[in-house]
Length: 505
Image 1 (cartoon, rainbow, N blue to C red):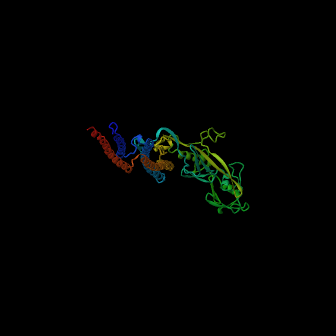
Image 2: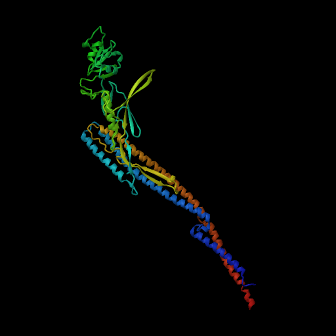
């Protein structure tokens, strides 16, 4: 029996210390809810858990970022909804102003409303903002935007690229009608040779010694031809001319078909220029709708330039012009020019040549603000693939091509051309709204994905770090009992050495 080393007490004390330490950890886990409260609890688990926490919190903020992006997109798109409504009203007003029943004062009143709507579009573009960021004003710096060319309602085909456009139309021959700027013009014939060509009677006509000579007609006896509203029947030369009964010979036709005559044959019609024809302008002063083909082409060029310049406030559209005066002096430097093309086609086995004329246009332009780009970060990592770019173009009147629209002219022609400009503006706003709508849908899918990843990552992190309360409570109860048992055994072990006192008595 010894008193220096009470091994029973020492063993009980050591075991009790172990139980107390385990009990302390169980208590800590139960009170905190975490089974890893310090690195010593699970070094590897703590490292994995912290990486997951970083991802969870980053993704949570990314989801918030995306939600803010949706809010900004909705703000911009809501403002553009009003711009769309105003453009539709402007289109309605332009169509109204184009009607010929309106007086100049009526168009002036219509112009007042268009001006107010234009100013409101500018105001919306300059004041719409989200979190102090202006959404529709564009960004720092200017860039050139080319305005679409327009065909001015002319019969032909317009094709265009970024900076140039080409309008192609069929050639205009004598007798043909063509509408320019709302007015129908007729192509006149200068000579009887051109009359014969227009009536498809070239095989029945022989030109004179000079272009201005009457020439000789050889229509078949019995044929009918209308000249200046009166129908004549062709008599054989040996029968002679009977004017009273509207029967004439071929030889007499040269006296009837003269300057100013309108001739109809087999459904075709042509008018010769009168003595009032102005060769310098190509227009018959006695009938200003009777013009030469070259005059019509010049009018076409003028209309194309006017229609394509609407909204191009910084640089109007321009037509190709001659750089030098031609040798014959007919084309002067600065005159509009057009290009002739002969196209060969085979119809019913016969080769037919058709002629077209093309007009080249340099498109007008405006200088607008650069587009604003919002880079929305929708991921937990620094990868650039986590960026969603939202591009917002400047949406003021100048940027959508309607600045300076004027429908208050006397004829309504400007209003007609303004319709095309407003149509282009509606298309630009529609394109921007469509892009914003697509981005919003993408962001909403991103938010759903982010929230899903956060949920699953939290579940994984919970399995690593959270306390299993049931298991830990069982452990706590076990340690509690062991602690009480250890304390009891330590007391009993300490009592064991009391027997030494009996020997000392």
